[in-house]
Image 1 (tube, one colour):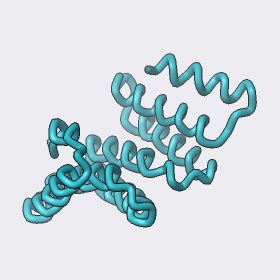
Image 2 (cartoon, rainbow, N blue to C red):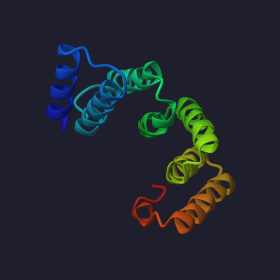
Image 3 (cartoon, rainbow, N blue to C red):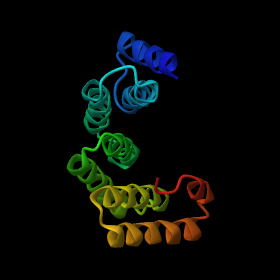
Image 4 (cartoon, rainbow, N blue to C red):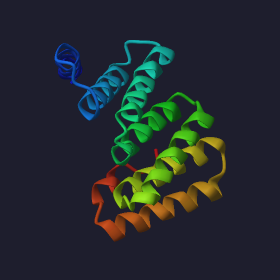
Amino acid sequence: MLQRGEYGLEIAQKYGFSGLSFALDRLTLARAHAALQQQPPEHLKQHFDQAVAAIEASKWVDRSPPFYLARAAFLLDNHDLAAAKADVDSARDIIQRSDMALYAVDADLLEARYWTARGDSLEAAKSQERAEMGIEKTGYGLRRLVGVS
């Protein structure tokens, strides 16, 4: 995955691609680097920041929720709760305007993780319940395997 992302970014830069393709390559690299965990979290965060900046620059607003949600998941894993919540909220604003039910489930699951990390089991349960209702409504059963963990 890392090689694919680097190759895609190399091609995008070589031929002057920008926009969505460039942003997706940045996100692929961010996820690959995070999965390998061979760099300190501060450096890994820069990869996610570059991916979010690339999608914002592309003006593909309707494609940006997975970028914010991916960075939020990374931030939660690294205990940067305030920044994670801000990313979930940014994604949710776009999700609600565009009626993106599947991304809403992802946002609810991340929010449940956020509230769990904050020690607020009541809010975590509310977010988890919203996610469960979204899963039922959309048939998004794959998310049952992910859970809040």
